[in-house]
Image (tube, rainbow over all chains, first blue to last red):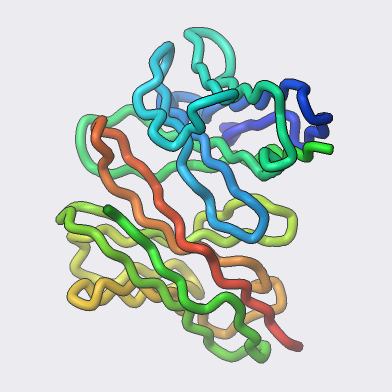
Length: 116
Length: 117
């Protein structure tokens, strides 16, 4: 049973380019979360998605950032016109569907974005 | 608002000694969970241990135990018999139910643990 997959593991972009980060949740998981970790900091929540729906994007910057989780395929975090401050590790996590209780989120290995 | 505080930016511990990493939290929700994650230099987030707010006993997982003091709102991680491979960043995190019914994790700033041979 494969874990959460993220690709690429490392991504280098020049200022002004677009960055696309992909996340495939664990098999059977329909909830995806994206977190950002700036250097020497903890992870910060960005967005929570279910299939074809953005549920909570309260942690996403208002401009240049977008996320989707289509019916087929991985979840995508897109950053347009990247700036140096976007350099960070971006983690995806997934959890199973549930009706009650609190469930652990399983993390992927992260994508390290460097903007030059 | 939920908040996690880790007051030890760095710790140095002799190999084979026990180590306690501090974590305090703040929430008004009665239902929440507390996690500890390990992040080695390779960067991945490794789940260590989980404690639910209604759990009566402290969680244990091998050499890891969580000293949960609900009244004090603290959830310290104890690592017994430390090993060189324990050198890493350690993050305390709290999971709670957000406004949309989803679970959200909020993380502390981390403690960098270095085990000295």
